[in-house]
Image (cartoon, rainbow, N blue to C red):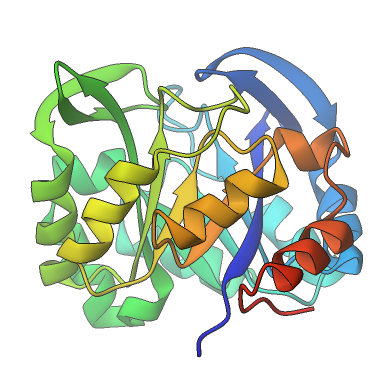
Length: 251
């Protein structure tokens, strides 16, 4: 049985880790390199670093930070934000990132998924999807959730899989930062639609929420930020409790 993964997300703005609610009202929560090291020592399985203003401000995710992170930690980590070309990805992977996450650039140029999968392998390509439930339909949003589109999420993730994406990082904008639980119904529907791993994101507040993402949502991994940043749920305790619930987890 494949083990479920626990992932900590660090949203980066101006070189610092920040956290908000529903993608707004950002607050500073620490140094991304030292936080990454702390989480790795606590037993987190993976890290995701997202430069949340890179696309909006037309900046590239800075390779300098990636290099520092790679020197400090020894677990897999994904980098996203402002990635729009094969060259961007080459720089980030060369700086030490294990995977890259693309969102806005993939929607604007879907061929980018094919190109990246062809050059670097699907295992390196994570499609990030920020979506909101509008009148019963999950609609994709771009630029850190600021720009709505007419693209329906389930259609988009299936196309992305067909193009070579190796993983889906689905963030429910309705649940993000609310600590009220993940979008499990949407996760469950997505898990039946695609055959690549799905990372649940947005809404973790309790240990039961993680369990529900796995047992109800059929997610392959659960990502969280504020409950880890604020030490609401210590990672070793979370993993031990999930294991007691019968969930295959790496201790």
